[in-house]
Image (tube, rainbow, N blue to C red; front, top):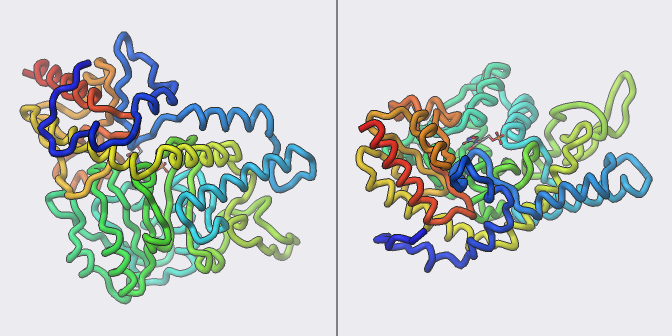
Amino acid sequence: MAQPESTSTRDTRAASPLDVTAIRREFPILDVRIGNKPLIYLDNAATTHKPQAVIDAVQRFYMLQNANIHRGVHYLSQQATDAYEQARIRIGQFFNAPSSDEIIFVRGTTEGINLVAHSWGSKNLREGDEILITEMEHHANIVPWQLVAERTGAVLRVAPITDDGELDLDAFRARLSDKTRLVAVAHVSNALGTVNPVREIVAAARAAGALVLLDGAQSAPHMPVDLQKLDCDFFVCSGHKMYGPTGIGILWGRMELLEAMPPYEGGGDMIEWVTFEKTTFKAPPTRFEAGTPHIAGAIGLGAAVDFLERVGRPALAAHEEAITAYAVEQLGRVEGLSIVGRPRHRAGAISFVLEGVHPHDIGTILDSEGVAIRAGHHCAQPLMRRLGLNATARASFGLYNKREEVDALVAALDKVRAMFG
Ligand code: 7TS
């Protein structure tokens, strides 16, 4: 397909040192055809595809290393344990965690937040204490706090966003007080693509004496994440959104906080000593990994971070920034289309509505053109309410997307418009 000239100040080809054609060859699923059309996959905020290296790592585990971990003295058990623990070390390095013992394997972002809410929340929250979130949170960063607030008598407070879909920093600061125990914020909004100002958020929270949990589900796939620079207290993300397997993710927490936190679930592996009267628990991370974990998933996530290191996160971020800017510009030209949210700093996702067409109809018609996007409330119903919408259509980008795919999206949207004339 011919590439149209862009009027964008950022040219993807010039700005991107990524060899997207070569990268695409590493993703077998990108060859799948939807009917007789090539797959145009723009639903990366929901989940990303897996490169061959990740698929191979998972397959290699089941073919050559499969055994339960931490328990056996036999060869395979030691192989499996080594591979699992090596993955933890590599993931710790990838995020520049002070120690890989601070990396806890969980099912994903949702479980990571629930773990903190249950374990840290139940121990530290008292009646009248406050948890501060924002209007743009995913349900995974709302509901666990509501549940712990109900149990403890703590209060959930919400910082508003501006009409551009950015956090209103002054209002955020105004909601902080000596009652605020924890601030829980999306690093990047899944619905709007807004990149939140972490430095300012952390500084303000610290000044109020509150801890900060960052929901990194939508940042870890798109930008370098350096936990020591971010200076937050907890960070959670999902493997499946960063080119790794489903059912695995990480919770990172500062060791002094983790050490003081009670277990989240009880069972095998997390104990030191059990009697019917009393049980003592291992140190983190094992204390928080009861039962047989997703061993293959952790190893697959290790392969995913190796893949991202090889590609290079600054290059990936530059490529995605350019393609997203190009998409904002091209979508802006579609008659009757409004982009929802105009954040100054955006990563990965663009939400939009088309006059007179329900987002679900947009999604269905685009699907018949081979274009996969998402339509709905994006698990952010309070945000939709704030925006006065029931739903949006959302295109979200990954490192393998190219300009021609944005052009195909726009061409398919023109067909939608023609149908609804
Ligand atoms: N937080 C954010 C910011 C997210 O985008 C998501 C998933 C989650 C938490 C939950 O992640 P999980 O892996 O535990 O499910 N977001 C989306 C989405 O935007 N479309 O599908 C899932």
